[in-house]
Image 1 (tube, rainbow, N blue to C red):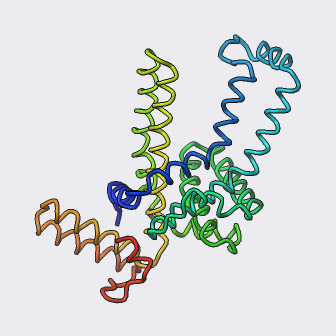
Image 2 (image 1 turned 45 degrees about the horizontal axis):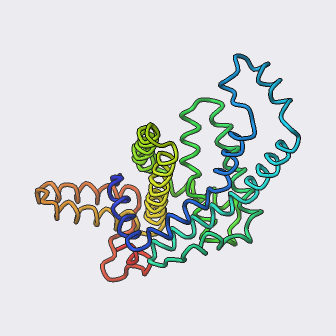
Image 3 (image 1 turned 120 degrees about the vertical axis):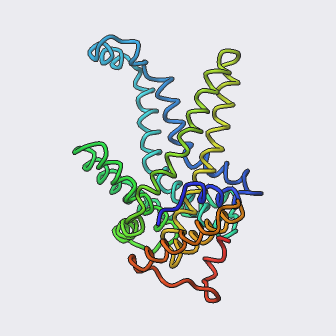
Length: 294
C-alpha cells in the first residue's frame, strides 16, 4: 500500500515545528565541507567552460600554483573522511526528532567516533550505485534508493555492521522504492525555485540572490531530511506502514472524503496487508516508538 508524499511531508512539518533553527543548522553544516570544496574549486581552478578543448584546459591546469593544488587535495581528503560521519550525525538528529527528542546542534557530532565505519558504508554504497549505473541510469537510481536507508540504520545502531545496514535497507525499501523516489522528487521543485530566485535577484544584487537562494536550499534540506526520517521510521518499524495508512485515512476523513470511498480503501488495504504479511492492527499494544509518530 503506497503512501503519498504529502503524508511524510505533513509529519515532517509537525516534527519540525519549534525546531526549524536547529534542523536547518544541522542540515547545512552536515554538507559544509562539500560546499567549501566546491567554492575552492571555482576560485582556485580555471573555469573549463572558458576553454574550447580539453587540451587547452589541461595546459591551464598545469599552470595552477602547487599551493592551490595542495589546498584542494587537503580539502578533498577532509571532505572524504568527515562528510560521511557528519551525514550519520545528521541522520541521527532527524530520526531522534521523529521521537520528539531535539538533540540540538550538538546532534550533528553525535556519531563522530564512527568515522571509519561511516566512510566504509558510503564507499560501499558509492561502488554499488556506480556499478549498477554502468548498465543504465535507471538501475543506478534503483540502487541508490535500495541502499538509501542504510545510513539511518547505522546511525541508530552504532554496533551494527555495514553489511547488515545494507541488508536491512534492501529489506526496508522492498516494494517501496517508487514511494521513496516520489518523496525525494517532490523536493526538486523547491530546489529549482531556489535557483530561479537566485537568477532573478542576481539581476539586482548577486550577493542578495546568493544569500536568498542559500536560505531556501537550507530550509528545503531540513524539510527533506525530516520527511525522509519519517519514511525511515514508517518503513522500518513494526506496523509502521499500517499505522501510517490509518493516519492518512484519518486525514482524508477530516478533509471531507466520501465515507464509502474511505471504507473501500480500508478493505483494499487490509487485503494488501494480509498478502504482504503485515501484522494485525494494534489498538492498545502499540509500541512507544509508534506512538511517538502521532
